[in-house]
Amino acid sequence: MGKIPGEATERVLLRSLQRDSERSLRELAEETGLPVSTVHEKVKRLEREGVIKGYCAVLDAKKLGFPATGFILVSVSGEKAVEKIARLPGVQEAHLISGDWSLLVKAKSASVEGLGKLAERISAIPGVSKAATLVVFETVKEETALDL
Image (cartoon, rainbow, N blue to C red; front, side):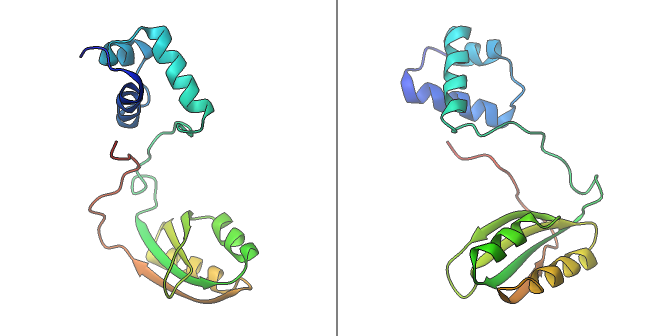
């Protein structure tokens, strides 16, 4: 692959790092056709600017004893209640949403019963008026990569 100017180079770097964040600077340089020092500088700048927020291992929840996934719809008022929900063990994501519900929570648990207990804990938080749990039977697609 030849040298790619500017933003296009950064997209190549970001796509590559999304696929495998353990790629060496040398491998990234070969892919972009840029010197290792330039690739290093670009990656460090993307980290400083917060475009790259961090690096992490993607774990298999089922193999680690968390086979149950659920989404919990919550009607909530108050920022403190939202913060309390977001900090609960088992909560992976919490999104303020539009519509009849105000918060969408993604959770992982050892069992469906565990998801139910989490929903009960959420319902008991002051400021929560109602909650509904949706249990996932099978995950068809789950990834963190952006389509760059």
